[in-house]
Image (cartoon, rainbow, N blue to C red; front, top):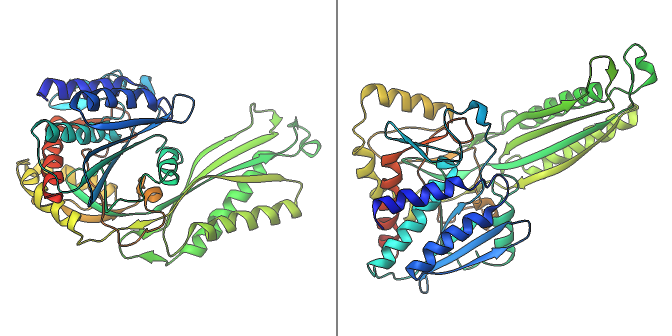
Length: 405
């Protein structure tokens, strides 16, 4: 595949507004390219224009599963310098929603498979592509593929999420909880005539946060660090002179095996039950995402191969002292390490579809997260280095070939 076609493919993927949906349109683009290359593949729809895609190249074991998600998060056009759903090239960078998280990684996986097929590279085993829907909200596609046993025979798992020139082998779990508070509207001059849903919600949130932090204080994982608790969304009320009849908050937690999700959820249940019994509040909660932490092996064959294959590309960046400093600061904000000389291994808070694929074997699997990207995922003006996109196509080709040689 020539350079223009590689750019065109990425551009076409970015144009699909697969914001928490419409992944089938992405899958059809990938299927067209895979079909043209003669690579076996199938789209697996599951309603409302959503779908997964599975493709295989090679035969037998070992089976190297490679994965990427087709959905993206919302983009506020008003805050972008370019159209978020158009691939824009500027100053050796690409801009567009999903270019880092993670359509470039997905495109690089597919292009690598196609180019290996085109030249007839012998593979002693199978590359299995698992392209998923709904990773950003609930990991729905990966859960469905796992239940349908598409991940049952895999021997290693590479997810091309945006790590940049770093190799992640462990991820925290995630627990997302929505809390709903129902009250009774009244004029604000007569608060006793109503039930203030916002006040009750705030009291409950404060208690839950205190109890979660008390339960997790001092509990750490040597690779992943501490539990993370964030109140990310809150709504309530509609005007200044009315007692609010409803309110809602959404809490996101990044979790450890040492403080498991079910124990944290129990805190929500106990606090809310007690509060409802002692007040006139009507508060309920629901879990909208529940994924487990996963920890691969720091010295697995896949991780070691990533370090070997990726090292020349890291060193070829020829970064200046000022560029290194910026990169170090960026990595620090993400809780990650940085090197301009080698592929470092680490754990990180952000989760991947691996939590679903490896649900029955979360520890010690040959697992790695490694793909093109930077710290602009989910941000305005999401971007990716042009060089990194093309680097990872070559890295994946070499990685697949040597892993299955």
